[in-house]
Length: 430
Image 1 (cartoon, rainbow, N blue to C red):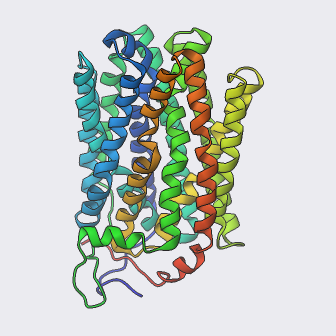
Image 2 (image 1 turned 90 degrees about the horizontal axis):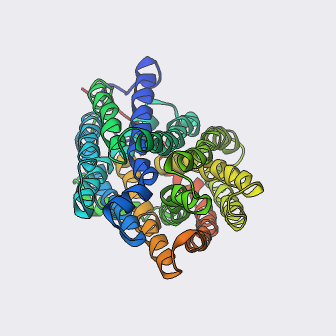
Image 3 (image 1 turned 120 degrees about the vertical axis):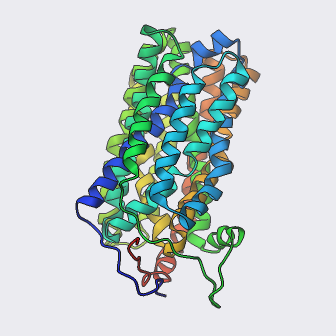
């Protein structure tokens, strides 16, 4: 089915495509810096504000659920309005509330602005993914998504390394929030100059517009997407638990300050750069030989990541255990570029942003959003400390194996789902 109205076809490639890739990737990096800065300062913030592990975990859970709650409606509005303008405004919004988070003087004073940071970040990855997969050819989607996703570990690592350093050496846990707000505002302004494709309506067979709820539900009628969405949520139980609690685990188990803990955690997170590059390249190469490859690659990466993480935690992430932790940091990102591409490979242009918005929604609602507070609650129930936190992290690591099974189920439908939309085209923005 060809979607379009006879307008000028949207050109792909060229310097304008590279500009979009640079701006969106840098924004994604800042996005994850702003996410992970809380992890870097979680322990000193917890002590300063007198929080329990459950309360500390809830700060990130509320943040993640804010992203989840708003990701789908915002992604739908992005598809109906303008990806370019939406990305720009969201970056400025979340950066402003990152700054305000640093002004918090109690639990509520940090919780509310942190939740609003989540609102601002909720639709960014959907808008960015839709723009990038539109401006590069389909056969390069895995590679482009690999570049886009490799900045996630860079941002996460910078968040914990710089966040820990600034907290320890320059005024306490509030300072990183003030500093990290600046680049997001600058990049948000630059995002207004990106090239976008024409917004089109989502129409049924009779030519009538399909509303938000129907559009969202229609995505679950695509079998490969259904399993991918649920699997994407389950895999992030493991991932978000480690992102939030790894620095705190190092501080407790090794009795070190946040700057040294941030460095140890950051090195593990930086290995995800290798995973993103490797995963993006492999997904394109293997996909040419096996049309199920993108989902099979994500399945393999998640299953191996879970096994390696459990072994690393059993060894207290020390010595050989730290080496395994580094390997986990690489494996956990291998499947992400492929899943980004899958979300775009099987939908019509009118649902490109919404499709990834649904993935983000499911990522948090089906597991990732609840993981930080669940780990905190399990840790409290087991007496807290290094042992309680370690046990909680081992328990949630098994989610990676469950996710691998769900992605295998989705791989069986992936080729047929791609064939249904292979004739869709995009038109240039007027």
